[in-house]
Image 1 (cartoon, rainbow, N blue to C red):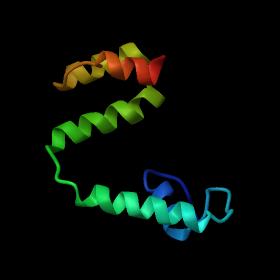
Image 2: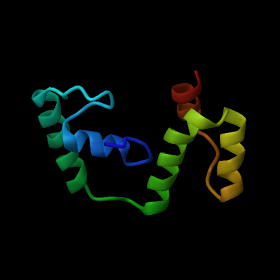
Image 3: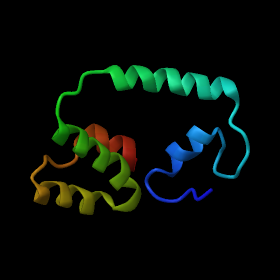
Image 4: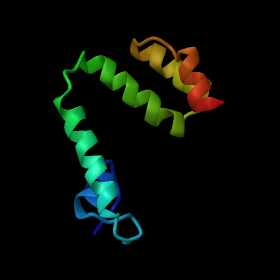
Length: 90
């Protein structure tokens, strides 16, 4: 199975396999599914807020702090917050 792209983790979880092909323990899968079911039932506050959160979480892996901050601002969002900088860059 191809485990590349943005859906790789979801595909692996659905298959019950880690990316190296080893089985994920049933207890881990059950807890993950329970938490995700609760998350899927949660009311959302807005698409743009969720988009920004995803950009910060993933963007911190790919951009340095100044680049991500300036790109957020250029796109029309608030720049990085102190707690985000502390969590993702320190």
